[in-house]
Amino acid sequence: MEDDSYFEDEDFSPVKSILGLLTFSTILPIRVYTSIECMTKLTWCWPFIHLFIGILAAICGYLSLNILHLNSFFTAVIVYAFLMIITGYNHLDGVMDMADGVMVHGSPERKIEVMKDSSVGAGGIATMFLVASLTIAGIYNILDYNFLFGIIICEMVAKTSLMTTALLSLPLTPGIGSYFIYETTPSKYLLSTFIVALIAFLLGDLVGICGVLGAMLSGIIIAFIARRNFGVANGDVLGMSNEVGRLMALLFMATALYFF
Image 1 (cartoon, one colour):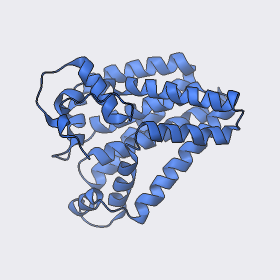
Image 2: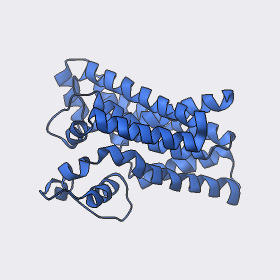
Image 3: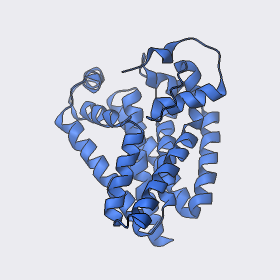
């Protein structure tokens, strides 16, 4: 349920905007609410907030592997569960809703109607299962190479995927997603992605850059699918891009680890 505090008018504050984004996208007890307009002005910083979340997930993975001595598969499941729980399952409904909208036959208006429907169809459930299973497999794969930094990278660049989709999409209004789309300008996107790529390179060299490329490709694909099916994008589409972006980053990094 959307908190009315997100729609209150107030002056822009960078600190409150960052903390508002953290409150919006995690279950951490920050409890700082700001208007949606103020919060989304710093959308370009979203990947760096999830850099922090990725660090927490990597620590979780390290503890599972080296303290509890669990195997890589069990650790991968725990890391994925941690990411889902700490983010409040924020984007999983987007995966299911967009999948339902894409699967149904009819006009873009009909597809949007199905996507916005609160009920979930077989296509949505199956897609969520596939995305979750493949993401766990991706985490398992990079853990086989003992590449814990890959967990940090994939969580950070999931938001780069989301921003790529936002940059290439027309917004469905009204809706919270439209504010993120309007604020993702080419200049802000390029600045954010440059810093993300630099961090990914420092953490994982060329493997990290491959993760960024995978997330960007994911964002492009989701934007294309959304435009073809709906003509526009909303929060559900951005949520799908986030989850698929994490998956694609893991796929690209797992492949790169083999060759590099």
